[in-house]
Amino acid sequence: MLYHLFDYWYGSPTGPYAYKDALFRGTSAILLAFVVVWFLGPRVIHELRRRGIGDQSEFGHKALNEIAADRGKVPTMGGVLILAAILVCVLLLADLTNYYVRMGMFCLVWLGILGGVDDWLKLTTKIRGGSRDGLKTYEKLLFQVGLGVLLGIFIYRHGQQNIALAVVGGESVEAFRILNVPFYKQGITLGLPAFLVVTVLVTAGTSNAVNLTDGMDGLAAGCMALCSLVFMVLAYIGGDPVRASNLLFPYIPLTGELAVLCGAMLGACLGFLWYNCHPASVFMGDTGSLPLGGLIGYVAIVTRQELMLFVVGGIFVIEAVSVILQVGYFKLSGGKRIFRVAPIHHHFHLGGWTETQTVMRFWLLAAIFAGIALVTVKLR
Image 1 (tube, rainbow, N blue to C red):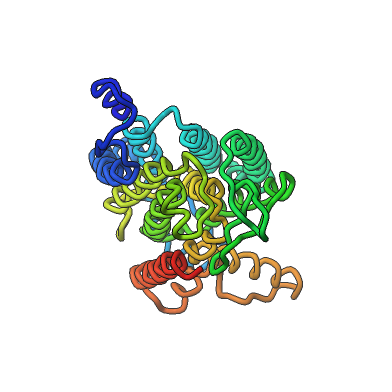
Image 2 (image 1 turned 45 degrees about the vertical axis):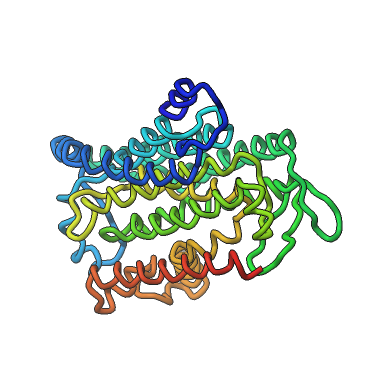
């Protein structure tokens, strides 16, 4: 909104104005999102407490349940603060005519509603004495896969209308079809079927991975803040033809505007940490973790940095893999476990690390992964 008002006042869609720079507005979004969450936090937390929307976690492990016994006193669904801050920042600071921004908002709202329904079912069912623990896994996956298919189709078609060429194997191909590979100059060309598969896997995978990481005070929010910072830089580079060419990135027209979206995510996560750091006053719940994961996956898809996401979000990958290994080994071995409990942050917690130690050490690893990702920008 402010972006378009400035355009109207100055009467020129071009010019050396600061507000025209996506990185400037992305940085402004960091500050604005932080302030929005910080300002609304006490009011939203009070309302969640008043309504008795407390965390009802069941870890399936007696010792862990005892450690987390007090979590029921802390309200969940605090992800509404993050969603509100991102929406406010994008509406005020982003170019709303940008197709990728509008699709990002579609992704955010879709997964925000999905996470909200899941949280609400968990809470209301247990209050009534029911046994259903939110949405079933296949129900969530159905909506996540559906979103991935829709995003894949619309992103691919839009890319065909805004063609920027890149050279792969001596041939010119559309840049939006290139799967960028860290440490490799040319990347891999994808057709529509492969593009859809990658989009579905990334959207559903990152959404669920962030959801699995959201199990300790500040863990998911801190790691997401670092991921958002890196992708803010990557989106800015990939959306500029000169910078993209210099760094051998596929140039995707109009994607630089996603720096504003990433800045809003970063600021919202930092603001949420104000209330979510140990001891937490509120948890984000699926209402926050599902859309945050899905949105960072969406940015990776649009900027053609899906594989870079595995590096930047190394913590999320480790958490998801630990669950997959634990469940698979449990079934194959007839009840044996690799870890004390999964996701793996709980394994270390039960092993003697305090919650603060676990979160801080995972943050440090996340910062190292983010640094490695930024280094790969030049090592190609």
